[in-house]
Image (cartoon, rainbow, N blue to C red; front, side):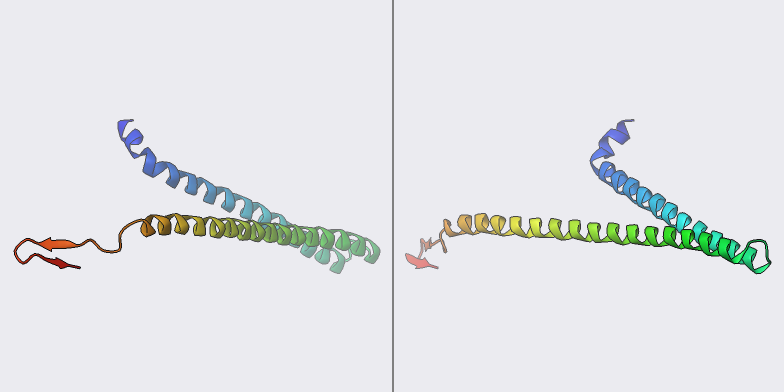
Length: 129
């Protein structure tokens, strides 16, 4: 218990990153499974048509439904990717806008400091720069 409290500043952020990675993995698996299941349904439908279990009209109707679902999943994934890229771009721009402010403060502090500090050599009474 004491060890966990002492390691909290280090392990807290690390555990947060691990949790986020697990959530991304779970979501990716879910999306992949949904698309994989639709492809399996399409293959099963094709086999049913090939062996004569369903008519051509029924095959075309079901095939269109499955293909539309696949297309919708791909479109959703593309839109999510674009949204993530836009969010990353906005975060980068925000960081870049804050960075020059930090540099200006550092430069102001530097400008107020003397450029050199003269030292007097007590033996020779000369100023060294």
